Image 1 (spheres, protein in one colour):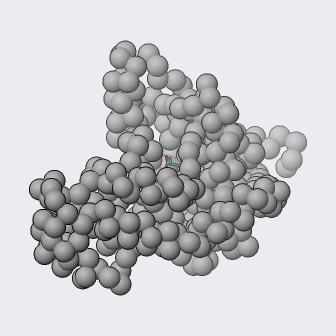
Image 2 (tube, rainbow, N blue to C red):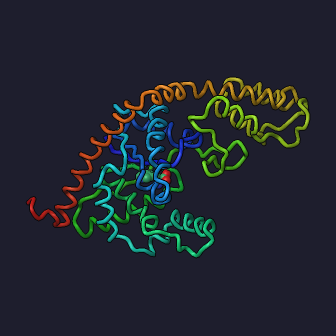
Image 3 (spheres, protein in one colour):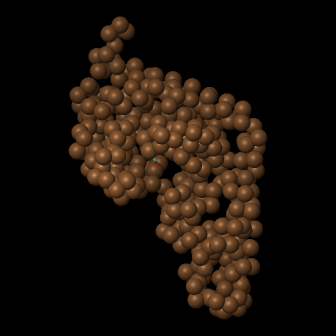
Length: 335
Ligand code: TRP
């Protein structure tokens, strides 16, 4: 069985964008692969080092999100990055395998640097060593556990490429030690926000979270963007430009034709259509929401799962570390 490893930064609850774009795929993959799911709190801190509560609170929240969508701790290993010091150790060794200009050229980093410059209005003085080095740390995340395939979205491809370079460099110097991973792109598309934005995202404020209450879901759906040319309830409209119909397509499979035809003929008001979407969305998320309620009221169980997963992951990282130390000739007293 091949090993997969992927990670998620605990900076907020997971939303439907994650659900469709990644999580449903991860749930499938856990049956086919030896699977590691990392809660990347150290990586989250590279952008949130001055806000430790945020990261801390979201470690458990993200764990609950993962469990609620169906990641099964008996099949897969869910673990917390900061509790595995071997990752930090590897990061230090790998940092010699990559130049600073190469990190600045990494397209993912480059985009984030540009964003920071815009945000902080300076010329990059806010770029920390830790932030610039997060691709190195991500290479350690992957290789510590012998990750062979890394399920990620497009935006992460440059980080996997960076990992591959580090691995090749390491192996060429210290001898065949690490596995060179490959990305595994999920065929699930990125989903749009309720506001019509191409992406659903936390920072865009257009997301429906797995832990949103019924009231919140209702409010968000009621505010969704519909065909701007439809003014009155019985105006015919174009479902193809309507975000409510877009979400119906994702979650209301059975009545789609009816919804589409009624909308086109002006037989369906937007408010009723939105109410129906809320109902279908709640039905669609029923299982997830029930599991979420369960884990929310059993925090000790969540902690136990994280501790056990982390212990299991740590054993694997220790094995890797032993080999790394041996091949780097750092095993002075252990020959
Ligand atoms: N960088 C990833 C993200 O922002 C999260 C992540 C951390 C990750 N470590 C990883 C992804 C290892 C894949 C493999 O989404």
